Every structure is written in C-alpha cells, then in structure tokens.
Length: 160
Image (cartoon, rainbow, N blue to C red; front, side, top):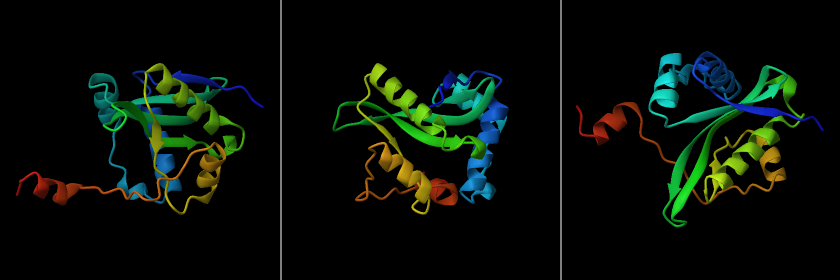
C-alpha cells in the first residue's frame, strides 16, 4: 500500500485545477461544457472562499484532485461536505489515490463537525460505482437531481 500526501490548493494552483477539471470532463464526455477559467477558480476559491480543493501527491506531482464545498442538512441541523469533483490521473488509478482523497475529506468532515460527505456519480461510470460501494458508500437511488442553468435559470429569476 502506497502512502500518499495530501495538500490543499493554494493561489497559483488555478491552472492545475483547471487541467484536472478538463481531464475529468474528457473522461465524462463533457468537454464542451467546461467554461471555467483560472480567473473564475481564483475568484471562487481564494477570494470568495466558497469552494476548496486538495491534491494527492506522488512526490511533488499532483496525481489526483478533489474539489468540494460545504452544504447543509436541515434534517441533521449541521453542515456537510459535498464533493463536486474527484479525479485521479489514469496512471495512478488502482493505487489508493482516490481512497486517500476520500479518507482526507472524511476526516475533514469530522474535524469540522459535519454530518455527511456526499457526491454524485454518473450512472454509466461502473468503475467508480464499484469503488464507492467498496468503501461503504450508499447510492441515494430514490433521489433525482434537478438543475436550472442558462436561459431556464434566467427565466426563473425573472430576467428576459
């Protein structure tokens, strides 16, 4: 079992974060949906502080990344961590990087008094589903995620 070091993203990592996001989008066949920029990551991560990222390292090389933010459960009456993106470079898969990232987030959730750690996974992503279930994660199959974006979001907001 390899031992991995985790480090938080810091200002200056925006380009590397964007590389991981683009690699994840390519894996998920969603490359055309990435409109994020380094400037946007800098603004939301380091100025507004609404999202965080950590890297798992092989020496000084980023082998994987987890990007996350806090949410809140009214039923639990406390916050949680929502994992937006987890991506490990192909050459590092199966070596414990993903597990190291999730273990770090689980510890962080407990340290921060959170009641849960949640994420979504595409239905067709069988390798990730097997990995998550192997860790004891439970699929919330009775829930469907809904989303408003673009014109529909503007219409809902009352903009023409």
